Length: 162
Image 1 (cartoon, rainbow, N blue to C red):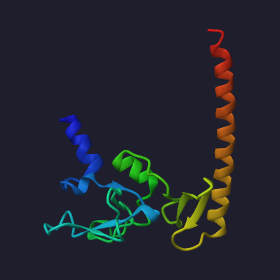
Image 2 (cartoon, rainbow, N blue to C red; image 1 turned 30 degrees about the vertical axis):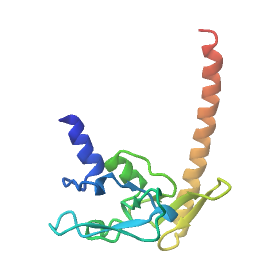
Image 3 (tube, rainbow, N blue to C red; image 1 turned 90 degrees about the vertical axis):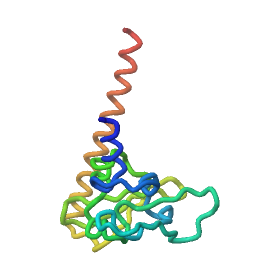
């Protein structure tokens, strides 16, 4: 019963399961190639439609936060990577959507062809306070990374004596 509950939580639309549709993975950006018409909560028929040509064998991706059906109205700028992790149990692949605070602009982090991370603002450009908050947290994360890397090196040298 617990395993069934986890499936509903990770794959369903709230309490509703949509056979086959629930097996389609989430991804935004250039990979987002399908959308769902109809609503999981209205009792109407649901269809999955291609947004572009999909090659044979190519994976189909829906967007859990960039879709155009009634189930997604209003969440495109609030249902970001932390909510996807909390509600669906996974960290989305690149591009990953974030917002700094509930009322701040949404942005995507994506890897370019060289593997470098790029940022794209998806709605209003950020105000100075948002950018300052972003810079401060970026600096904090870099300091944390250095601390973790140093701690791991110390741990490795300790382990060889145990």
